[in-house]
Image (cartoon, rainbow, N blue to C red; front, side, top):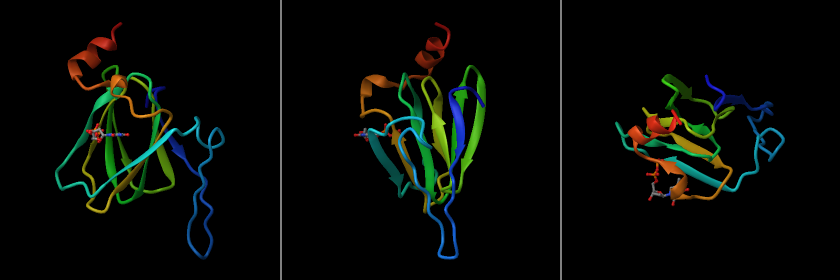
Length: 134
Ligand code: TYD
């Protein structure tokens, strides 16, 4: 794990009725949410991502099913398995990441600290590697 990748356990309010998780800006989330999106119905064998962000902070949560998040920063590669709604993976800037091995039922919820901005993406791996050395 690097400083820009953090697995965050969420408090589970479970009782005999089932489970509930609450996420609040600046309380158990480290930023104010500006954008929410979710990825679902991912076809078998499809991988997504293949980019880094310059500044964006995001928290990825598998609210249903499972997915692997492959992360790379400064030649350190780590695979995080998201397979339960009670944890989130915080990915900050300059982490090359891919989402792989989605289960067919996976719903991957993403909370972001900023609006969609294509200018914040680095989609070229060679440029990402160059950017790590400046
Ligand atoms: P893309 O960047 O390919 O997704 P992934 O990171 O999963 O590989 O995004 C797919 C499309 O959705 C692309 O046309 C951009 C658009 N999009 C938005 O309009 N808003 C968003 O918040 C996101 C994440 C993507």
